[in-house]
Image (cartoon, rainbow, N blue to C red; front, side):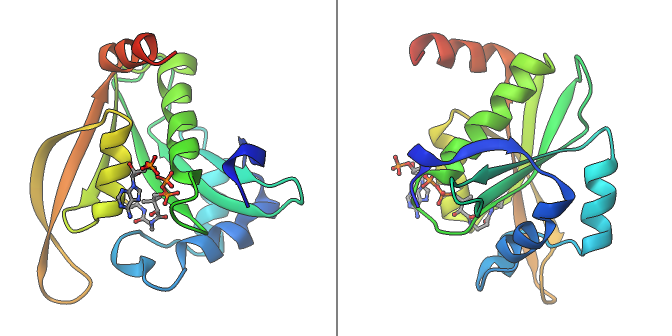
Length: 168
Ligand SMILES: CC(C)(COP(=O)(O)OP(=O)(O)OC[C@H]1O[C@@H](n2cnc3c(N)ncnc32)[C@H](O)[C@@H]1OP(=O)(O)O)[C@@H](O)C(=O)NCCC(=O)NCCS
């Protein structure tokens, strides 16, 4: 699989199995949330959500990204979830790049935001590499009884446009 050959397209209900398999990959339970089929079906039907998948030429799904709080000229759109099947192949960059394009160029939002656990070095590296920056930290209940630190990372429309001018 290569990101050169995958296309980022809106997800359909037929993609839910692949999306659920992606968010349930071994080890992902400590960094990314999971929904059941009914939750994903409701999300796909919700006008404030957007789902995109990286579709390979053979139809397989290399990863997905989900947005929430979607609205024209939204104050802030949330990148709720992103996960790829095979890591470090460029799919995360491709998916997040498309999500930011939709957030700022299609919906003209003022900012993009997401929450990432402080120990999720891969996620933080991806978000930072696309220009997202830490805004705040909070403690949340983790998988077990221990608290985990969740970092809110954001990007403003202005910094998105500056980075697009610098890297057209
Ligand atoms: C986080 C995640 C989506 C990143 O996707 P990915 O396809 O592996 O990332 P990419 O290959 O597109 O990498 C993009 C950039 O992110 C950074 N990066 C990603 N993984 C990294 C790692 N393990 N170490 C260092 N940098 C990393 C690099 O800057 C990389 O650019 P480069 O390859 O040109 O150096 C993926 O690791 C994943 O699905 N993780 C499990 C689910 C999860 O944690 N989701 C996020 C919840 S907040």
